Image (tube, rainbow, N blue to C red):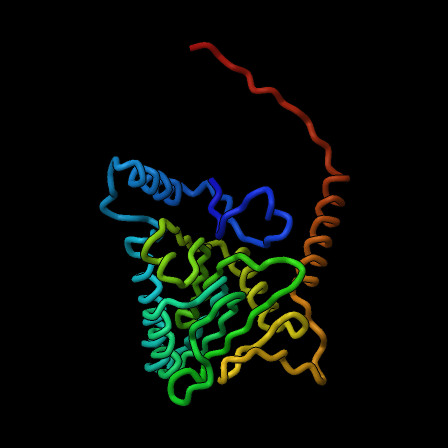
Length: 255
């Protein structure tokens, strides 16, 4: 099955960048079946395996994850949050981020559109950075990183941190468990935090400014991702060129 982090249509598919997960995980498949059963009014499971669903408990899931980082920071343990989304305006989420920041959690937010959180407030949001990246491709994926005391977790989903997504729509959050995929998502987040070409950083007065570029190597995250994708395609084509393919028909046996 395929889980995505946003909505597509033919008009926007060539402009949007997004994330998805192709999986044959039985536990995720069971959860997905439960989602459609609930939407049809058929049944609701007693427990869920992997997925978190809005408008029922996805918001509480995020609040729990943010609160866990706050707890670790207070205990002097590694704590960090990196979150990428389209918009941030949910008051409860913002309040939780402020509390986590005040406790010492380093929080880096990549928010393309509206952001109601204020940075630079002494004792409240000094540990929070917010940047918006606007380039040739419309950033549309949602990726959430939680340090979890050096056992980091990464989630993707369809919901922004907005009341309409968390409280009034059906949205899904799914964990990314495979180490190589987690590393790739972390690489994407780090590249966007390093972007000094198309990024604008939110200031304490509510304005956005380009990051400092002096004595720093220019970084355009979207161009870097395109170059990496092209390199991966060339490598895959080279592997296919040396491979032989043999079609073995499946034989059907009558019972």
